[in-house]
Length: 150
Image 1 (spheres, helix red, strand yellow):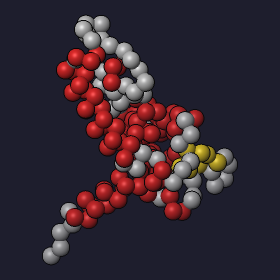
Image 2: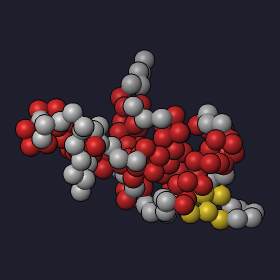
Image 3: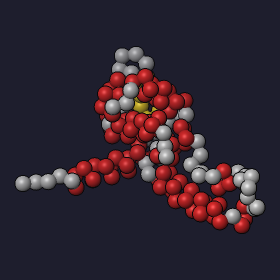
C-alpha cells in the first residue's frame, strides 16, 4: 500500500502532466486547490520531487513548478520510489541485494521468495511502464466512456 504522501505526489504530477503543453509553471496553491491536497503538505512533497530531479521550479512572478522531463518520460515508478523507496515486498527480491530473511533456509529454495519475485516483477513492470502521459490518457478514456447521451 502506498502512503498518502505518494498518492498526493502522483496527483500533483498527473495534474502538471495534463497541463504540460502550456509550459506554464503550476503554482502550489493551484495544485492544492484543484487536487484537494493540503497546501503545506504539498509544498514538502513538491520540494522532494524537485530535489530528486522530477520537477524544476521558477521563482518570482510567473514562477511555480514544472516537470523536469516530458510526461511520457516520467513513470509512476519514478514518483513512487521517491517516497516509498523500493517496491520489493521482501528484501531478498530487490535487484542487486542478496539478503535473506533470518528464518530462511536458503533463497534458492524459498517458495515465498519465488512468488514475491513474480509479484515484484509484475508490479515494477506496470509502474515503470506507466508514464504520467499514459495514465492521463487512460483516465480520459474512462471518463469519456462513462458519458451518457440522451
